[in-house]
Length: 233
Image: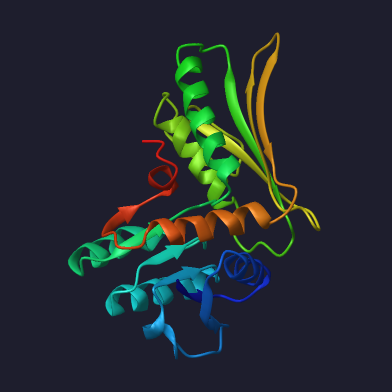
């Protein structure tokens, strides 16, 4: 499989190594100032860039008919328009706020716990996410996905970085050097606390999941998520 890497920072370089180890070829390594030369030769593109570049990267792939995997967060106000563009062009697009296989199982656990806690009004939910200081967006896309999983299964209606009011989920977003990513969900009552937590030890899991998703999307058309890749639907 020929892969275009849109974004060639730390994540892009780890994805490159894992892809080559799995027998794939890299035909484009695009940094912020580079062109899209070589993109037309790709079987699939993997976008791990920055919020300001992601929409253009994804749009270009869709218009060229190249399946695209995106793990860039912080651009989701444009998600619906990207979905519409992909549908109009009969494209293949997969967005993941986190490609770690473990995190995607954690998403399912989070939703299941939210369902169980939905009628226990004495518990108040809150969240914490910790990432390295180079991460540009806050809260993380993973934290937003976790919050949405709770909102879909409870009476909570939105998340906030500020002090939570009724029906709001407070997310405490911290930035600490060299932390790949830690996400915790807390249910607090006057008598106890329930906590679920995922801790990433390195970026390898994110990169592997992205390559697995790129392998999976071959010869498919539609809008997908890691639930499709892992057959969790």
